[in-house]
Amino acid sequence: MRLKESFFHTRQVLAVNNIDNAPLEGELLLRQTLKINRVQFYQNPAQQITPEQQDILQKLLERRLNGEPSAYISGYREFYGLDFYVNNDVLIPRPETEHLVENTVSRAQKHRKLLIADIGTGCGIIAISLALNLPQAKIYAADISTPALKVARFNCYKHGVVDRIKLLNGDLLEPLPEAVDFIVTNLPYVRQSELDTHSFEPATALDGGADGLEIISRLCRQVNGKLIPGGCLLLEIGQGQREAVTALLDSLFPTADIEITPDLNGIDRVVSMTLPR
Ligand SMILES: C[S@@+](CC[C@H](N)C(=O)[O-])C[C@H]1O[C@@H](n2cnc3c(N)ncnc32)[C@H](O)[C@@H]1O
Image 1 (cartoon, helix red, strand yellow):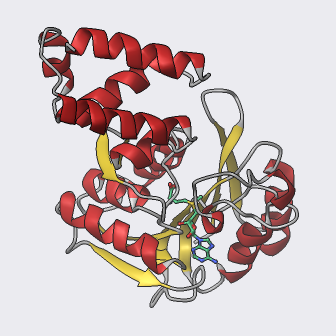
Image 2 (cartoon, rainbow, N blue to C red):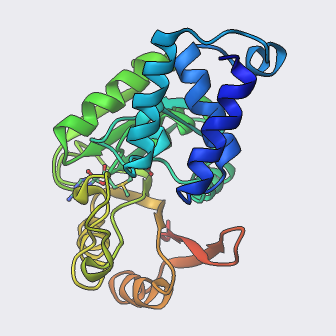
């Protein structure tokens, strides 16, 4: 079979099985099978697919039809213009988290020297994107999951920032050895009752407890002493969580300045709290 026919067939199988964006998904599976980039994929539609390659493709296709996300099958996901290695020990990066990074970069770039903590780093997307965009920053990246930290370490090497990011294992802000200028965090915020029990993603990356805000609330209560005066806490939140989170921060830090940034869909996504100096 030639690439062109195989692509057509793969797309059809994906579409019939209700996989969204079947053309892109089919392209990714074929490119992974043939180990080719996008340009090579579209330049050589007459390329022959060997029987061995067809077997590999069939196995990848079966995994996808079984519900496994394409990022876990391919082993990577793009975030903030960078490629990150992912496996099922970490959350697959979501595009909305780019707002958190963007917001931090725009606040932090005027600082000449700064310390940042990324709490719940997962595969390291936030810490690494910040390290590459803020060359003056030193970063702590913490997670309670040891397997997730292994993935983050791999990505730190991949992006050449291993000397600027210190990985820490532990609960929320507890492993932080000093107060920092910025705490940036995308913690689990899905209500337990809304968790997808068939998800391939780790529950520790998603489960925010009964109200979705158990872990975020615990972190907010630990901020004292971990953020310098004038420092800033940036939290990613889920739909409908703005009021509860801002009320909690208001009660804990009545003199702080709180701002909300919506994502591209108009959903309140980032809560930023700046402490007085
Ligand atoms: C929503 S994922 C975010 C991963 C990554 N930062 C991202 O934005 O894609 C939440 C991460 O928080 C970690 N986590 C959950 N509970 C934690 C805790 N109590 N202390 C530290 N990390 C925690 C999970 O292991 C997971 O990696």
